[in-house]
Image 1 (cartoon, rainbow, N blue to C red):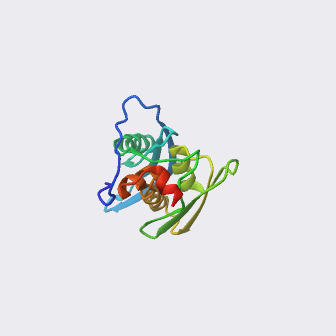
Image 2: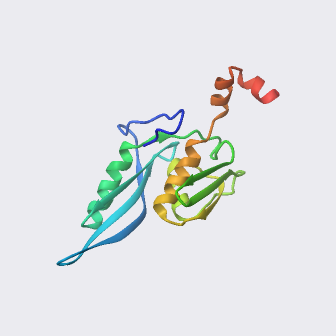
Image 3: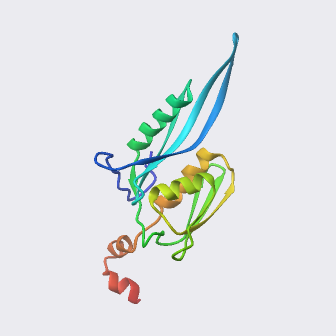
Length: 174
């Protein structure tokens, strides 16, 4: 699922206190010769509110079945995001399909300024102060994936110093 990203730390769900947030439930209809067959798809975000987050999609004939499948799928796709003092290290854009998301670090006391699907992802990660803007498609599936794209492209100061082969002091003094 995360093949296009260079340095991702996948996390095992064992021993973590994960909280799940339901982002959206959609009713889908399959028209058959005998009438309409209804089903449900649910998208869920799980996280420990301390830098670990994952998302999943579940489909079933019942809402509860779709949600439980989505939670199990989300637990299989947990990743670690680097945070800095309750916010993100730098501003970042994310894109998936027609959805575009812009996230920007904010000062202490700002809160999570984000709508719907972006808010669910950022709160599950554990971000407490951030500004965001969602543009383009408002489809919750694509907005969640665009938010993950932005979070996965974040780089911590430690990663940047390590990639350049210099110390953190030299990174900030130049």
